[in-house]
Image 1 (cartoon, rainbow, N blue to C red):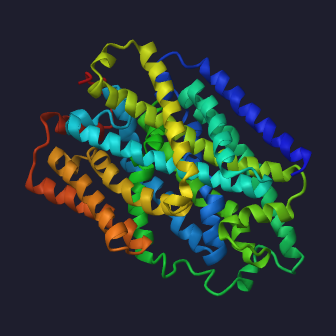
Image 2: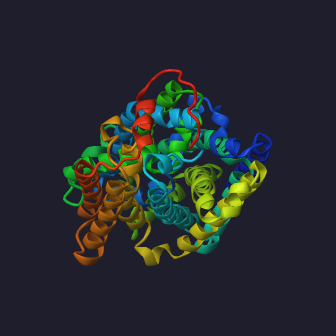
Image 3: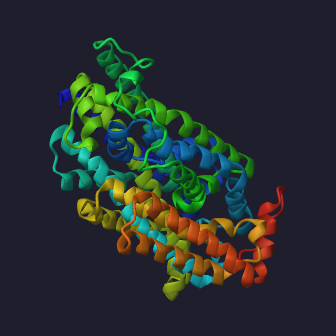
Amino acid sequence: MHLLDWSVIAGYFVVMVVIGVWAHRQVSSSADYFTAGGRMPWWLAGISHHMSGYSAVVFVAYAGVAYDQGIVSYIVFMFPLAVATGIGAFLFAPKWNRLRARYDIASPLEYLATRFNVPTQQVLAWSGSLLKIFDVAAKWSAVALLLDKFVGIPLVWGVVITAGVTLLYCTAGGLWADALTELGQFVIQGLAAFAMLVAVGSALSAQGLNYLNFWGALPAGHTDPTTSKYPMYFVIVYIVVKTFEYNGGMWNLAQRYIATPSPAQARNTALLSSFLYLVWPIVLMLPMFAAPLLVHVTKSEDVYAQMALDFLPAGLLGLVLVGVFSHTMAMAASDANAISAVITRDVLPNVWKRFKSFTDAEALRTGRYLTVVFVLLSVVVAINAENLGGVLSIIVTWVGALIGPISIPMMLGMLRPFRHIGPTAALISWGGGIISYALTKYVWHLNDAITVVTPVLVSLALFIGVGALRRDAPAAAEEITESLARDDNSAPAART
């Protein structure tokens, strides 16, 4: 790395911290910290939603799949996000916004105590928080692998440095800091992506190729949309999984809908994010698809870093590394904010009696402390990521498989057709999904596709089936679902 590269990286970190300090001045209450006071414009929320949706995993794990198998990396892992978020624009995004306006929620799980009951809310809160620790840990690990490849920083220190800078700005400014840094990171990522496109395009032209004709020179099977490892049924079910995950099951993304001023703006947020998921990953991944023609690596996860080292001049290498940082820090910061909201608003009031008497200032301070704790726990897991099966294993088989059982009761609980389904079906759905994952992954040792597909299908079937047999929804459930389906200017309901 040249001095110019180091200067770019240092400048980036300074800007992130400055934004965090500025955003700190905009936060005067816990509502500001967790939901931006409901004042975030849709275009900022949409970019934030998009940037919070993926991380350095794209440049490590998915780049490795692109190097080994070709365009299936986009078809399987990125295209489903565009479809899922587009569905959510009409089905879920406006409802999240109405929950804030009509029920004064600041956490995605807050309404579950009334919609189902407190035990259901607590089970989903605790299990989801634990899963998020592993999810964010995989992101730290991915960016640390790239740091090791670029500059030789040991994995442990790469994790600590990235997490430390993220912690500085996200604890200071909350959701405002997350969104504003994500806007800056989106611009930086754009510059880095186009720099990489030009550099790799130049390398292709040296072989008489370009981005239009290099496809025919790729190894056999690299232009196939699906493979035996990732068949079409996996893509279809992955869209179902991501519909739950990217419209609220991944709690930090629900916060973007909650933070906008109106349901219409929440819908626009989702539509903008959906468009970006459709188009932007192609820009990012074109160099990855061409990689087999240009470089040779022993570990496929190193391919993007190797191309940057081989083809980028001084200064631009640092810019690409900053671009990689940007996705990881965006997702991790928003996850940390969402987790602290869930613990502060949903868990602590039920496990610590004294917390109920806290002032808003004390609750805000507690939220910041919990953000620190969450990041520290994820750092510990990240340092041991390889012992847990590696980055791709955590993201695809752990998070992808378990997000369904956690999110299905929360997401379907907002919809009118499921208004009669109560806590019994919700808890059985959650438990059945977890058990089916344990059986497919650790007892029967089935492949990744089946491991991801099974839990979400089992949870969905149990939620609907048990709910049809036992209709034990509390009296408030129908009022909540009717209110969320109503697109009017109803006065906010009294908080229960």
